[in-house]
Image 1: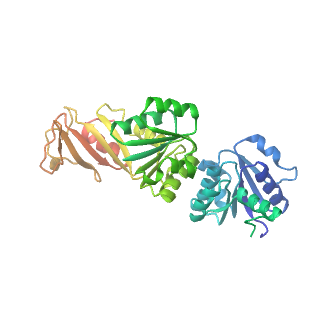
Image 2: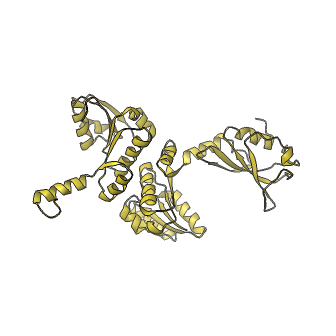
Image 3: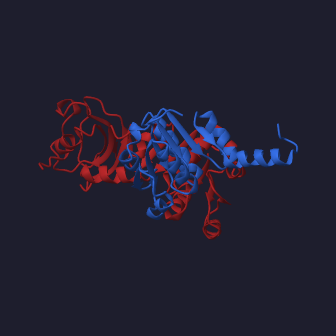
Length: 140
Length: 220
């Protein structure tokens, strides 16, 4: 990964805060968006990025977080639809070069991959790892 | 026509009722057990409890054979997902989403989903003086770039008794249809306007006010 990226992370839960802490420590510029203020408590004391409290499906909130200047947007909220919408808006409306969305539901993931949204499905990833661990069928 | 509606609350109840009254088949998707029971009791619709953006639920609701899908939940992200899945995965020819954030109207259009904003519609109605009694209807179309207004000509209107040719309406406006005694007249230059005529006007937001003033004779 290149250095000095400007990254916007949507959702400051376990995954969002993990990514924000790591990317900030690695020297990248980071903005985290979350609708709940208390979610920012997940950020480590060394986190040096910005926090934006608001609903990321509201265009004004994405503007406030300067998504238009982002090199990378990662959507990590618990809701697949929020992540998918934010990813598409970041790409189409703000022209962000690289956009990643977490999507839990594997069937939804397939549809959105066709739309050109880069997705990571924790269900499928964990499933693969479990299968590999037990060396069973399907572990290619 | 088979219409799938995703959402809840009174707007959905009345939407369903209206579609049913027009003879359409309606399938409703709603996440709340209680609301589903209520709606199923009150309306002759198939009600499916679940998340309308879940492909399994859409299939159960018969998305494959639907003619239209309408997503009117309070969450823009869900409305977008419902419409995108509906049109792309199930080939529903018409997918319409409600946007709660008016800014999302254009965003959704860019993403290939027809969207309408209740907020924007109400604001434009108020701004464009629909409070005027004679105006019975106003619809912004083409992303708000064009207005279609229906209004009744008051007896003291300066245009009454004159032909369309004699009118000097501002540029880029058109009297598209005249409704007179229950009949529809597509007017020509020699059509004379009469008191009580209901006319359908096409205007642009920029000239809407001046056109309305020219027709009603109001000066402010």
